[in-house]
Length: 65
Image 1 (cartoon, rainbow, N blue to C red):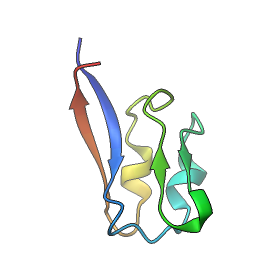
Image 2 (tube, rainbow, N blue to C red; image 1 turned 120 degrees about the vertical axis):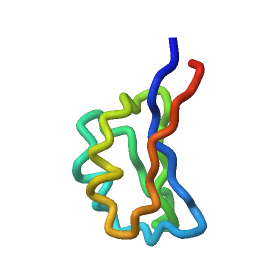
Image 3 (cartoon, helix red, strand yellow; image 1 turned 90 degrees about the vertical axis):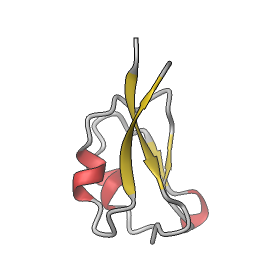
Image 4 (cartoon, helix red, strand yellow; image 1 turned 30 degrees about the vertical axis):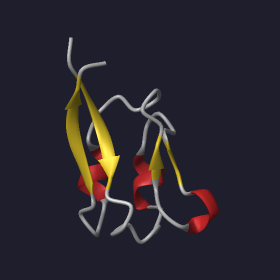
């Protein structure tokens, strides 16, 4: 069954932390303050991070697992 997961365009991410603040599963970190990283095992694909991102660099994608 396909699942929806969030992904970040790391080259465009400004590491503002807005996505981290709204993630209900704490699936997002910003290692060394460089860019947002989403843990696919914790992400439930709710899309809150994508809606909150001021740079619009987070997208939702359908995965097979």
